[in-house]
Length: 137
Image (cartoon, rainbow, N blue to C red; front, side, top):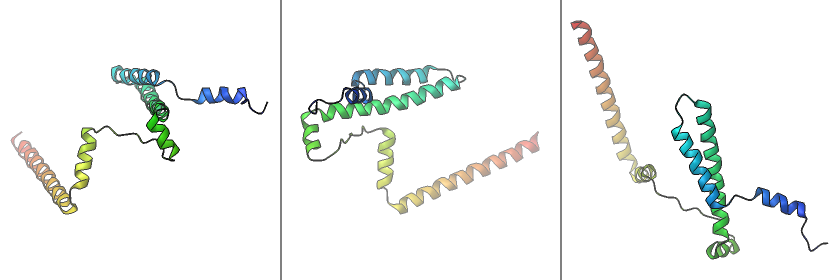
């Protein structure tokens, strides 16, 4: 009896295991598409779709982790005690954030000053324009 694992534990393990990768990706695509296609006034349905898309994103990551850990490089890394490292796909926003991180602090302060100056100029133009419009009307 000692050699055989408990069938209840095996069942729980199977239930807690992530779904197959393709199924998880299809479900994630469905919930993302549903959220995009729902009209704005269906807030509860959009919220549900967003929450389920987030859950399925985590499930896809878990399935990718399981698939990677079952491969040869994954087994080698696991034997070395290294955990799964997901390679990030570069996005435009991520690349901009990375580039902004590399900019020296003084240049960031100068850029912030320029933006603040432009905002003050725009606000002044709007106030002067509103005053002139009020005079004319």
